[in-house]
Image (cartoon, rainbow, N blue to C red; front, side, top):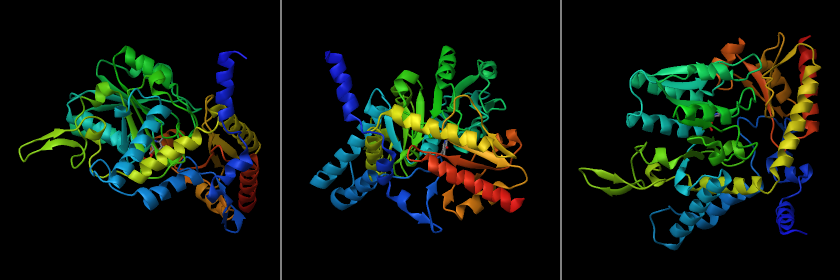
Length: 422
Ligand SMILES: Cc1ncc(COP(=O)(O)O)c(C=O)c1O
């Protein structure tokens, strides 16, 4: 065997076999019942479930390691600091950042975007009249912070249009770029439509005009590996709780080039080098952006979630999710009066839908009685809903632990709803 082949085999051998029955056992909540029926959890885009290893990591921290970090010389403080910083290293390696100083622990994707908008706003990155490009399909988390900044600094938000399938119209994006464009902030994968945006092309185009790009990766990270150096994005944000980790922890990745120049977002302990009543000097990256006691257990839990994800071959997970997407799309297409909202060519396993004359809330409420959890409402994308002329939709969003049998239960549930309203 050649040396290369041996290495490949070793990597392959080190990955866990994608066995759905075994995988589901890793997630204790998946074996519970809801309303007397086995839980069918199809609200993963809102928040994913947690494997036992993540739950154990959080419990282990509080049971054996709990202390504040970066500030004690005693054993536990040093131990906790090491665990937290090793989680940062896991994030760095997982997204292939250049350095751990580019990994900022925050509360969530939402906080990460607020950090960037506030900090760029404070450093006079924007001049009056400058423009920020976002798209029609943004989550409110990637609209409102920019709107708030635009109001403060007299900026303009330019909105990339989408087509009826829910895809960005690339030529229109290109047309929006002007000498006043200072930032492009775009969702990687849409939470409401499942659309996977052509972010590589967007970044390439923006960079050809020296415009930095922020990617909202909240819905990408649970499904596939992201390589920030290969994408060449300037900022990348995501939340732990959507990628099988704890709530209350998220990540801002930023290129050192920008983070170095950006002022802190919040002030307090742990982000300083020296404080006098006259002035404060700030710590180096990443601590400059991490004021106060962080969510230590959350960071450690996120590290455990990354370890869990990386046990599997990413291709196996993606193939399974794509099989689910294909199956649910086919089954839903057979249902009279049901319309899928978001039919992009390049899509992740999220299916939003409406049914003639039946309110999405009724769909969600009725199938919940059978233990099936889906999301109904505007999905924090009200401008997108307006584009489709729909105040609300129902949404089934899948994770790699979902099964085709669960899709069958969802479809059966939808037929039941239809019967009740016929
Ligand atoms: C695409 C997208 N961006 C941002 C967010 C905000 O995430 P969080 O509430 O965890 O900050 C979400 C949450 O649904 C999302 O789907």
